[in-house]
Length: 418
Ligand SMILES: Cc1cc2nc3c(=O)[nH]c(=O)nc-3n(C[C@H](O)[C@H](O)[C@H](O)COP(=O)(O)OP(=O)(O)OC[C@H]3O[C@@H](n4cnc5c(N)ncnc54)[C@H](O)[C@@H]3O)c2cc1C
Image (cartoon, rainbow, N blue to C red; front, top):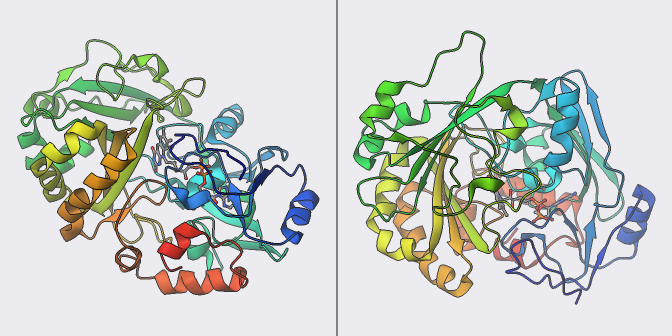
């Protein structure tokens, strides 16, 4: 065993070895040596999705090429969002959305349907225009939006091949200002949920569920538009929320030094959309995460369902974050085919206790056809997860075609019966 761990250190990879090819030819040699394989990104998943019993392949030592051209950028398989964003900015370009942290690899993030927040903003995966991968058999495959199988090739759970390049949509660079508010009232949030999420381009509600009357914080990120309007104060006052009197961290009591500037100070998109700054540990570090997606229309009822079991989840939580993601058409995207709201749980680092509580949480959310985040901890049985995806069988067929020897299959994909 390699003994190497994921970012949260809750998982020791079972892989025999981790290899770091420096060129595509070296990557091909690794693949030609046979046995189970998997690509490893920046290790930010909390479950065994990235694991294998054979060889883990990290592309971190391959050239991190980034080519900006028109409204597209082409990135190599080892590039992280934190590498990409400043290069885009130098070229006057931007991405439509980012996750809460820039530390993650583009290839690993889009493979799991990673998302930020926004009523009109789909997942990071939806920006992908083309995927280039090397199959375990050594074939080069590029799929673009014109291909019938493209919908299966972006959110692929690492099960199709080793992605060596991706092309992404870009748009003109923009500035964002973010604002934090304390203690928005639940009754008002639930009475008009759309009014809350429309306060900005990206909105997050943070809660520990400890106060039955109010969530802990509301973060609003707004693009700075020439002559643009201000935050609708009437909604803020209806929520009973107060403007934060200083910088906030999502987790109550944690120093906000790791967070990007708040207080309405405008800044480049990539220094406002993620909550956390590249040079700092994001979130708390000693943590686990789970996340569940419901249809947007079900969000108030799903929030009520979690409030109803606050006594089960709250003692295990650092914080919960609620975000919106608009629909995409990628087969295995958790927001595929439906505008969604994701309820995210940053747990304390006590995996047995979290796993013991998850069935209660998943049962509470079951009436809403929940889809779990692929990279976080869930206990729902594979067949239940599969039933949530109308194109599941198409993905299985694509997987079997690109990896007929099942070399990319691992314990995670077997639990899902992929
Ligand atoms: C502190 C923290 C905050 C987070 N915030 C968010 C958030 O805001 N929104 C959200 O949606 N998620 C969030 N996540 C989850 C994270 O975005 C996902 O787990 C993401 O998949 C991590 O990417 P990675 O490169 O670290 O993946 P890894 O864990 O290394 O790998 C993930 C999957 O991608 C595959 N993969 C990686 N690289 C390649 C490649 N080159 N070719 C083929 N397959 C590949 C792996 O085999 C594996 O199946 C957060 C995680 C952490 C730790």
